[in-house]
Image: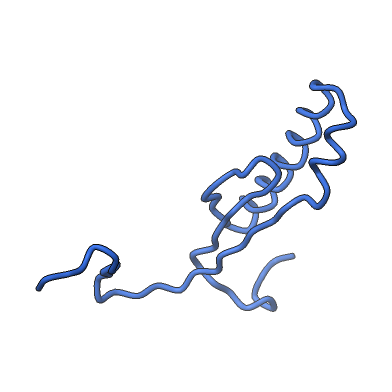
Length: 84
């Protein structure tokens, strides 16, 4: 089978994932008014808090974008089945 360079081929297996992105609005504007130490702490608090929340619910972080996190959930549950 000749596959062109631009075509992405997948296996015959499928899985369901929930993909998400959380981003801090206006973080560049806010952090530009902070010292380097406070700016670092600002992002540290956000990223670590989001990571703990995602971990609690089985989320996996794909990428840290500085003021955003790209993540996914592999095992999908109905909201009423979750222990909130």
